[in-house]
Image (cartoon, rainbow, N blue to C red; front, side):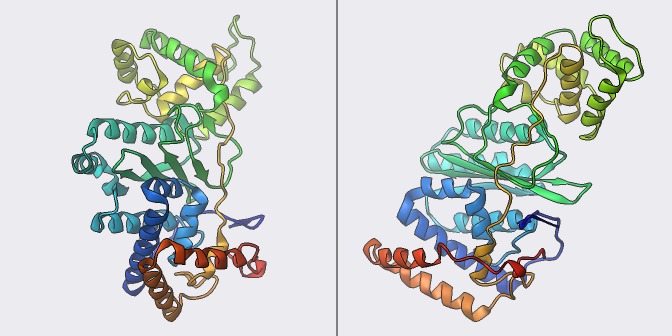
Length: 384
């Protein structure tokens, strides 16, 4: 499971024992309180949206350093801490069925902070559509947590699972980073780069997006005929307007099929045409427009209109903050079993630190500089 010293995020079973979960919650609570006091709520959101910082927090509280649970457990603990404390930040959503409660929980948070709920619900839906439809790498979303502060800023951490290889990929968003939801909007993506990805949100996909909107404005029946003509291309039929070699068609088709079925949802296209969608954001939000339909449309754009999406995987951060696993150890005994005494000493130290003023904390900041250049023993870095 290792590549050049970098961990993947494999699917792990098991659970966090109660004695460890209680300590994780207390330690996470102390860390977040210190962060709010030092950097404000925006500073907390910015860090949650940082793949390396998020993974480091996971390691600090004692979770596995290289598992899919590093997202679900850590995000769940942070959400629980924020729900019990009045820190100016709340969270909605979670893993599986909990993610479907996001809209209702966002309404509750919006009432609490006097925000416009529908704006955040729309953002939640659009972000999920971007990472499941507009960006396709074989990962199916199953985890979505939406953090909101009292000023209306937000961060989103969501994760997908590739069921074939049983590996996870984590997507991070931060409101202050997003200029466009459909042009390189992520704060970061944690995972191992794939050989290719259907990436329709890369900056070089602007022409693709424009042409796609033009094609969708046409009759769904016409688009369906074009999909069938592409199928004919794969069987050797060569139309006069695009002299593709059969070998080339098959290689392009195979690349799309590696991501799943190619099926057109005509009802979704009819709805898009009726509504007269004028932006890629609006198109993605059309009910029924899923990954298979976008694959069909993209295939038509490539082989009929000679307009291409990007196939560059936008992963920014391979998960690797292994250094922080040395704080208290790891749940799966890597790099060593969690030491309860050390864990309790750390909690006690942070509790006392929280009581002190910012001036006194400066001393601690100076001490942390000592560890910045420390390297972990490479031989201890192994998958759990």
